[in-house]
Amino acid sequence: MTEKILAHLRSLRREMFGSPAAVGRNGFVHPGAISFKPAERQRRTDRDWKPGDWAIYRKSKRSKVPGPRASSVKPNLKGETYNYVVEKFWMVDEVNSDGTLTMRTTRGKTHRVLADDPNLTHPSWFARLRWRERFVAIESQLGKSTYAA
Image 1 (cartoon, one colour):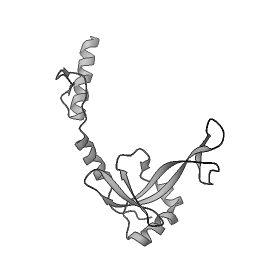
Image 2 (cartoon, helix red, strand yellow; image 1 turned 90 degrees about the vertical axis):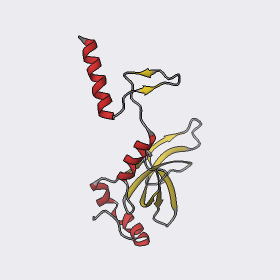
Image 3 (tube, one colour; image 1 turned 120 degrees about the vertical axis):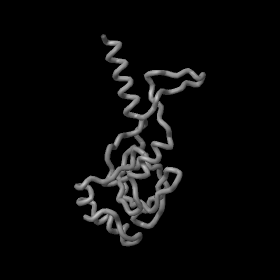
């Protein structure tokens, strides 16, 4: 009975991800495995970002004195410096065909980031409201945004 249930769950999982099965290095087909194709993943993330979108990037830093916007502050082993995370407020300048985004900072610098980077997120409605002036400063340099705040 459990074998039937497991086989049914495997077939549902394959249908959901649109992949018949994963093929190992030796050519053996693993019946319950799922294979992800990077091109499919890249296309999915390209639809998520458009030029003019607001973005929050969580950048990890290290220094002796964390700034006032530092979060997740942790001391290093010797206690000399701290590791921490700072939220950066960027705007999508362009979506590149290789799955990267060209981002614009408040001061006009540009960064290239992978579109599926886990540190890169769309701001929530509360973040857009709270940090609106940071995004508006970028818009004044870059142009119109896709968000109406």
